[in-house]
Image 1: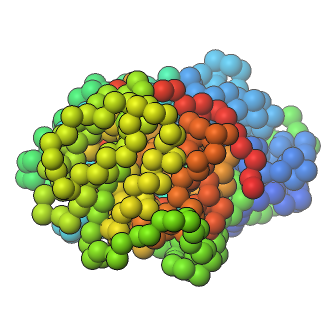
Image 2: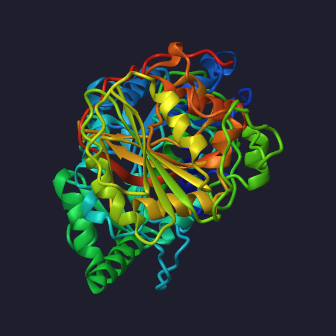
Length: 561
């Protein structure tokens, strides 16, 4: 929200003498001490949550603070807005529904209409190369997850980026959370933005939509009642949730229509939807707060002073939205191959000479209650064509499937219960490929999934690479990036992943201890994190689980080793 207030402050400054404000200071962190005629502007639902309690403003500062409200009714963050807005001198709100709701609750709020700003525009109206076909930028919740998962196949032939960070206060960029220039440049390089509502809200997400439109990225959004003055089909595409990916595909397959919507929307923003009137309204509200005419506060002699716009604590921002390699290494302690870890020796195991750098083996695990391995193999084999690959089938307490005599298939285990970790380690230490793809018997690879996984592993020089997984319940899992602190405390990454075999050997493969039975996958990811390893997320669905395996207790927590 700091970025939004920076844009709004710019629009107020563009009023020049009409604003009657000599100076606008955009800052982050605690409010400065009250000075004569100072007025502050904050985003309540973030500012009062992110700032440490001992730095929160006192009554005198709150009496000179305007709330810039952005959250919709029906979301928990709107309740946070209401809680803190009651203590403020005045409020403005960027949405019709929340403005009406605040006023109905006795909190005076004026409607601030967002519009075009040259501070958002990284495009300039010229046709440019747009390598991203579809982007989605929204925090994760079950509703959004299910809608994105249901029809993901419709976009399988397009370049898709789904950024689904957790819904929590964020003060610096993440791999899945773009800020500043990184976000605007991404939108200027994207053809379509998918927009879904969060929680129970059904109103348009104006900030995200305008950021996209100012950069020529066509918006395909869930139906909203408050899209005026924009016109559906001319400036954006609106539809029911289940139709959105199909709408996106249809406009991508019609380049001339895509260009028409892009240019018509951009022209309308620049001519009809500006922020001048709202900037004047906010400047007037600043004067009223300063003069004490909004609420009965101590009146002071009128003198022009800066308007301060603090929002949240500052965070690192880099041009491409991702920390540089050296910064990433310092944050998570990523090891260079062979520098920090040494192989765990397995007595009596002799590994054959390594095959080529392009070689790949696959380990597929079948456990009681899961479908036959044929489910995974049906989607796997076509993607292995032309590759130097061996398939290792691991059967734990399951009668092995009847297999044809195939020298490229190795069977481990059988009806005896040996443990998933032991069988996967048998596959690992009998393999001599450069890479090892690991799947459950219920995992079906989506088209081009293996290609995308291998490309991600190589491009990022990571130890492992994984994609999003569609569960049998129709939800997306494995949507968050690999973060050491999060991985250690929470089980959120699936079994399906591709690994550098050498990296698996270095961290000792899978646990064979009874205490970790059922949690072998989580334990492996945790040990990779603790060892300073790295994994990269391909931000789109790559695996579809066709059958629910034995339930995993995702709420279980482990203490760091």
